[in-house]
Image (cartoon, rainbow, N blue to C red; front, side):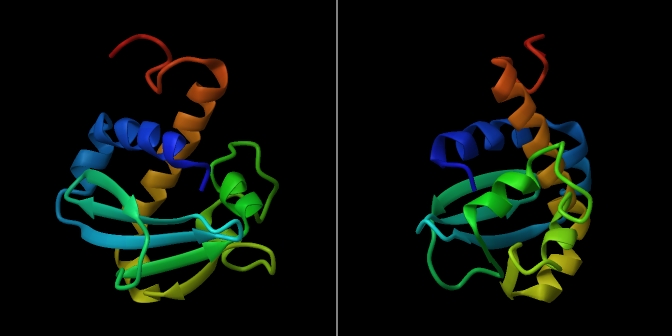
Length: 137
């Protein structure tokens, strides 16, 4: 995770993405995301829409990892075997699936798109443009 402000901007990117709207139209799940700095976020995904709340128990999926691994997850220049969520679940200092592995698999296509949109949002934020590349669309 990279901070509440980043997550809020990412949620706007997700809301504007037509592919997410299409592939996520039947998906409903919650995911608790935790890092080693004490950040704890509850992501609510409901048919293409994302909500972000303070974390807590009871999510369908729980992921935990060091802040560096969360940054790598949305870095489009991440090293091989550190370039996506499944890869990061297989390395010692990566992201751990604490609970809900079956939910991860069930919603993998949507979750993969959410990560892709995180990379898109990260690139746009780094260059001072919107996720649309500054076109306003």
